[in-house]
Image 1 (cartoon, rainbow, N blue to C red):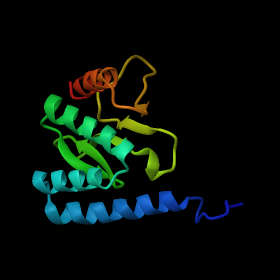
Image 2 (image 1 turned 45 degrees about the vertical axis):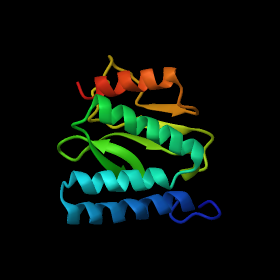
Image 3 (image 1 turned 90 degrees about the horizontal axis):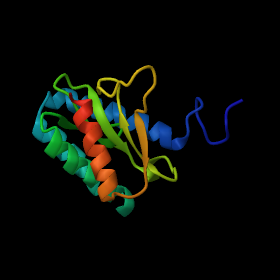
Length: 146
């Protein structure tokens, strides 16, 4: 039985994200691998965030552009992120407000080299951008692109 307010088991927020992703893919197809277009899309996505999420996204943006400048800014289901040279998403931030969760998440996709034995984390809950958080994310991004 489907939940009230859902279509095909997806919440309104999830349906909106899928629509956003389809739009992104159409825009990316038109722009090719244009770094400037990706950067504009990411900065626009960050600018539209709520203040708490915006501070986190700005922190991630700053770390990735400093530590892994070869990663290309790219939105991912409307969320700010960064892709490798093949256009595959490496790291992104899922703002708390996007899906009405109590914390934002910084996630790494399978192209990120975070492997550590048979089990390792690929998503991290983030509530505040502190020096300790920045240091940890910096270490993770460095490892992800190694």
